[in-house]
Length: 138
Image (tube, rainbow, N blue to C red):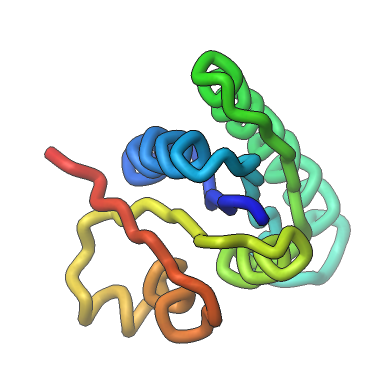
């Protein structure tokens, strides 16, 4: 089993990283840090350049998360997936037999999340395993 974390270096995901490390350590499970890199649209040369830039951003963000998990003694795996964030997290959770998916929240209203399709909102409705949604805090 594993703990899967959606991570993008946003304020919500920074706090979610700390919680995910605590959960992984408590259960003695590896932490799978996931970045969904699918850019909007899939046409033209700009798409490939955009996708490459998003993947590189994800790799940098995940390296920071891995360093923090390493400092806490939590083993990690990293995945940069060419999927939208919610889909990437659900796929990673299924492949790693995850115990829980951890994501950060940006403090948006439930209505805004429902209308705009936030990742936590999608996961809460689609996931077959528990989703731990960590608020960004103050």
